[in-house]
Length: 355
Image (cartoon, rainbow, N blue to C red):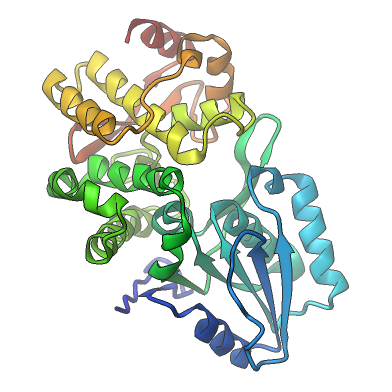
């Protein structure tokens, strides 16, 4: 299956290909079009590239995780490329999860003032989320993704075959972003997931392909309308951050060690659904339905830090905040999100003590 999708508000066209067992052929095709190709690959990824005939491919293997999304990670990769005589006719290919894609995209957007780059996301999480939309960046001691750029990849290859090597924990991490897309935009997709989540988690290919495709379409709906998050309404790309205001704060508080991204976002979604209910936006019945689905498939729903005032200091560093208010993407029903900007840090702390 090949799906081509375009970001209409930019001259740069981004294609998204959904294929199976296609990575080697894909890299070889890119190498034929560029003077040099730098494949930046996660050391955990077991892909044999030795049989590729093109001689202009240079491989950098990197141990990945949030630890690479730092000033040092950025410096090391940038200087390695420059030392290897990268030029503007070169291309970068990131083969790995979301952290590697974020770092590679940030490097591509800044080295020589911009290089073509391609993404081959190898986790379900990165396939349905971070590889789509052109956000790149690194973390600081004050929070996640506070340094970065909007810079679209030339192309994204989503190869279903790589998912078979993932643990159930990693699959569930990606599923958190899939269910998020349903909760903010598509009630019928949520209903479909209620019926098909077991098959999805077991990597049933037709079910998986449909879930990935639907998630990409929902994310692109917002990216096309508001690529750089300028809008302050229900069309804002910030709608995609449902669960992330709380989730990112949790990740940062634990220095990215206690929970993976999907687990933190799962807790964030349930917490922000409870905030929606507390504010009279989301009915109690729908909150119970969402919570039941998360518990059925043993997604994370709670953590002690939610009652701790230290979490508020992390939340206030969120890059979406505006005029001393904490910006939330909340939901008023399953399948519909709203842009909410009426909460300051004291109100958020009070709500967290009461939900």
